[in-house]
Length: 156
Ligand SMILES: Nc1c(NC[C@H](O)[C@H](O)[C@H](O)CO)[nH]c(=O)[nH]c1=O
Ligand SMILES: CC(=O)[C@@H](O)COP(=O)(O)O
Image 1 (tube, rainbow, N blue to C red):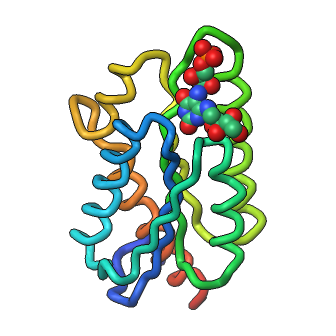
Image 2: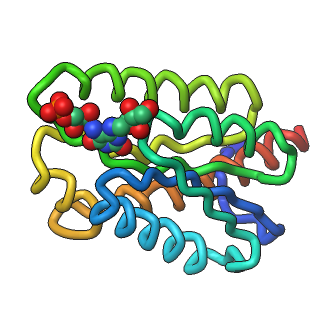
Image 3: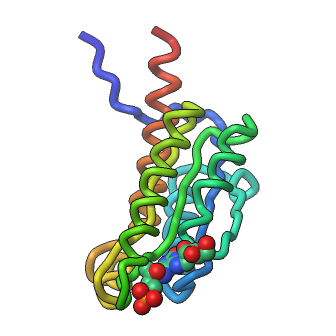
């Protein structure tokens, strides 16, 4: 019986991170968490590229370009969409979640959804390195697992 568990294979892994500048007091913490998680699991800092976009709505466009470039083994997307007074929140969340999912499906490059979608600022802060962990770090571990899993499966 073969168990595929995405265990680290020790090969080089090049990662692109697409991060939104909107709510940067949160997204900068997500980025730090993602970078820290990657480096702690053997990714060289020279193999991590970061692209800043204005807001979460712009993430899929750049994530698609980077994933399709063939230069990266995985992509992490980071953002913080915090509900305001209008329905704009719903449209932004819907667009970015569908867009990021489509990038991974269209390119085959593991593309992690690290965009917080919260009702309050506190909920976002807590998920960017405070009481509820760091979604950026979570995405770092997940993208490495997916990269190694794809490499394992490619050998069968
Ligand atoms: N309200 C939030 C936004 N809004 C901006 C959009 O993402 C987009 O940049 C704009 O509509 C121009 O296309 N973005 C976030 O990342 N977080 C928010 O809470
Ligand atoms: C998520 C958003 O787009 C939101 O922050 C915008 O705020 P508002 O709905 O009050 O215009």
